[in-house]
Image (spheres, rainbow over the protein chains, first blue to last red):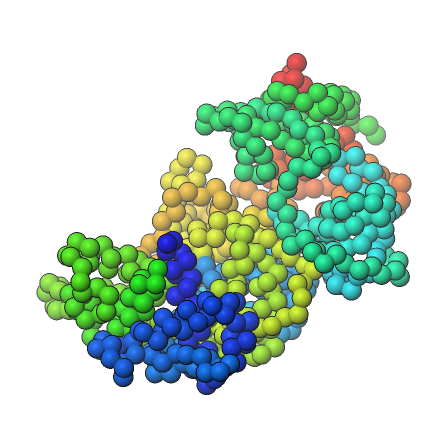
Length: 314
Length: 308
């Protein structure tokens, strides 16, 4: 049995007891909801509490914990009348969540005062020392979030990454999320008639169409790890010592790695993206396989050379 | 697990309720769940349980029982154990519950664990159509945050060297977590996912942070503005297609439709700057300085040579 699960279970018990003690009696459904229990888990934890207590461990020494009809009752547990303090990791998790939402321009006065109180009371020294920054632009986040919540179709002027084509398309936004330092919106694109993900910083203009849609029931959970799709182009690249940061920066498949040189498979929705990376890496990396990428790299290289080799155009 | 949970609850109650520090033997012969074990099994079990309590954040301390420091005992101060009530209103708890469900850290909704201790997660209808994933190994991050807020020194491996740092602040920027603070060589910023073998000092309050320290000021700015080298001014021309995007990134006014943008950009980290300019493909041209222009040529030639 993993000790993390033991710790989680103990933590939940130590949070549950003070809550019930303070409220007196609590409806079982509320406890299940509030502490993320299933009914069986809750019963099991109550039965555990019921057999623990002070040395002696006789009837008068043990805590009381049981289900009375549909109410949770806990008593004789005064030593647990206050919840344990937060660990640094928990405090950071909660503060970071609050600061992220505020940073995204979604903060409410209640959230801001909640974060200040946490900083003042729970982590008194944390205030000037933590910031969670969500990059610009935040201008479309609120509009898209509200459109996604209400099922309103939007029209976006979007410049794609790689091809740099600007198109105007109608999108049914499902979720707005932030990952790896960027904002995205996932939804159904009416132009290509498929599910697509768009980078918010590449949305130049956004307007309401006045139309509505019904969001799918299984709206995908926000958050993407990049996973290659059918249209993606793969390339095999050898990274020298100075190019090894790519391993940490991009989701890549490592084919071999001797600690100095690593061989990776790199996917991109457009070979142009890979070609640009290869230019940036210069002689510290080598394209091993990927004819489409090689072709684009030659074209891009020529174009860059013709602009940069001679004096600047005036 | 059932036995462990019961035993650790009993141990914690014993530690909280004992007026004096208790010895390992006291625990062994008093707390239910330990008594029947052999010496060796008891000690292994007790070590594991203490470790578990400490990881849960229980302030378990070992103190000398006599002036000569011959005997030692364990104690948990109930006031130190307990959460200081931040006095959150119902509305504030709801706001935190929404935020905690929207933001993930290290793949899990860590804020939710904290909310349980603050009285549970408030009911919020539906899943918010907004989510953020802050990435990163949460254990190391939590330790570093603890070091920042309790002012403990840290040591870690970074790019092949052992470093020592007074951690002043922690920041999330562009998808990565950073720790900033003072080293013997001056003020530095480190990326958390590149730190290895992190050790946090046992002592608290080891340093003072300058009164005017503000992490937002340290971390502000573009990636190519960070670093300790000399600053140069680069002039760049962005073609009309993406001029609006460049203008938005740089925080300058966008040119008229169909017009290119020429911008002056302060650069410290040349590699980060080149990376950004190259993200425009051939749609951007560095006009000045000439050594940065030459660098573009060198990189292209390097890449093309490797291809041949």
